[in-house]
Length: 137
Image (cartoon, rainbow, N blue to C red; front, top):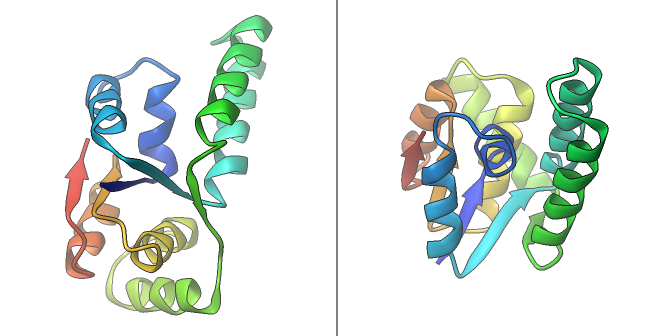
């Protein structure tokens, strides 16, 4: 089963917070992890911010970055294609979303994810409207 994670959800795999256990469960259930290509810089940015703010140590940053890069080495990384952008625009016109959130939806749709996992309520609502099976954290 292909499980697509938006950045807000997949971050919970590396930073312990509410929803982390559920993300781990979905990672174990998945036969294939899927992410939008934009999730990579978004997550590294989030990890760097946590390091700058002193919420994680430099050593912890290096470890979670290593773990993240290892985890995605065999994941499906969905590129931003015209079809992804078209779906993102459709979602933006129908729902109060941020641009990057809409691109995650477009990528999930384009890569035919069986499940879409997110911690963003508005994004989950839009995903359901697009016909995706949604797990809201």
